[in-house]
Amino acid sequence: MTTVRPFATPSARRPARSLAAATVALLLAGCATGDAPPTGPDTAAAPAPTAAPGDRSTGPAAGSDASAGLDTASGTDPAAAAAPAPFASTYEPLAHPATVLRNATVLDGTGRQLDAADVLMIDGKVAGVGRDLAIPAGTAEVDASGKWVTPGIVDNHSHLGVYPSPGVRAHSDGNEATAPNTAQVWAEHSVWPQDPGFVRALAGGVTALQVLPGSANLFGGRSVTLKPVPARSVQEMKFPGAPYGLKMACGENPKRVYGSRGRQPSTRMGSFASYRAAWIDAQAYRDKWNAYERKVAAGEDAEPPKRDLKLETLKGVLDGEILVHMHCYRADEMLQVLDMAQEFDYRIAAFHHAIEAYKIADRLAEAEVCASVWADWWGFKMEAYDTVPTNAALVHAAGGCAIVHSDSDMGIQRLNQEAAKVLGDAERMGLAIEPAEAWTWLSLNPARSMGIDDVTGSLEAGKNADVVVWSADPFSVYAKAEKVYVDGALAWDLDNPAHRPITDFELGQPGEGDLK
Image (cartoon, one colour):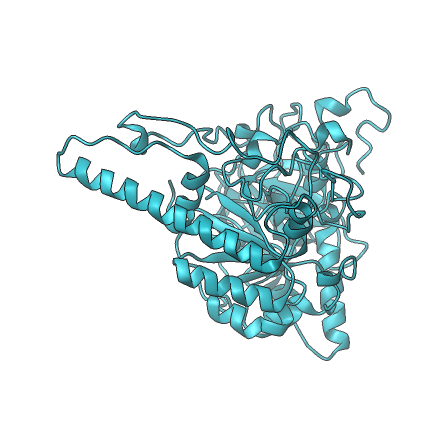
């Protein structure tokens, strides 16, 4: 598995490099798409309060509360530890001829704005950004005068595919709400590639997204990082080399779901007791495997431990291979989670929703933990009450890693506008943040939280050519994503119906191909 490297200092600003983009013909196929439920993100397992926006805290009841039979998988093959990871990515980029985007205003994703600049894309990579670039013969040219160019948006909190459209019970596959700890489940096994939401996200400038399980459970399961491209299977959408994430949740959701069933946790102290017990089991499981591997390395005849899918995921966190993405609202609770992570020697990649992140922005910056937040959702439950519309801006101002996420099949289509709201509120409170820096909330920072910032999230030479051409300043409510390139391939073109993919599911239905 991929070992996740430490985050760069969140406040560091890296120098821009040069690059440019190209026109590419999109191969139409049934587009892999995936939407979150269109309305209530909380799909109740048993009668429960109406869900708040973005609060997918429960799932349809499935069997008894017992987790017996769900937690483990047997395996006694001594070679199992060295076996290749299952469900590997089979993603292949679309055709990506060399392309240069000419004379655009460029926000490079590292915090810099370049005026009248070119962006060059060759072999699916950023080859240069700036003026007077050496353009190879035969490179397709796109006149981007008057346009703005940015890195593609990266959404680190999505439920597309596991809560697809239409948002019906039959499609509700985001919460295995049958036990407080379901670390054994993988979101990718619920993703429906034909979800129309993937196309709509692409049309909003999204070039990568992390699909997470819901927040019913203390340990919700593994996330998967996808590219919103035409595909027949989730493996064909999987972002090559992206680490897995582990969705965890604290606060009201798990205690409501399981407390209503007379089970632990029914309180926050019950939640933390359950977390800690799980990490203790994970440490013991890791120690067994480490002992086995030492014996094998020494040439001894050793019997491998029985595989346990739940503990295998938690061991991946302890080994630094799986990133923790934690649904958490209150500042005091986030600090306790940081203490727990220190106790068991693992790290948190990001707190999600993080309504009160502004109260502990300095501590989050010190710990190099991102705050992945909404622009202004609040008040839909008690722990979501005490926020400010400048939450992300205050995290940024403290030198932290601020992210604006969607958690919504609708919000993912206009994340640029969500970030713009934060910028406007920050300006009104007298906090000046350059738009070029704010774009890091949508690209480089979420990529960092997902462990893919070495290959995407900014327009730097050698990175994937994940690029968006906007009709206007992308922080304007009037701006539209005119062209979206994924690995240098033209995956979306607002001006050309032939390059506006639709899913097989939508073919022949009213409104077919109505994105414009």
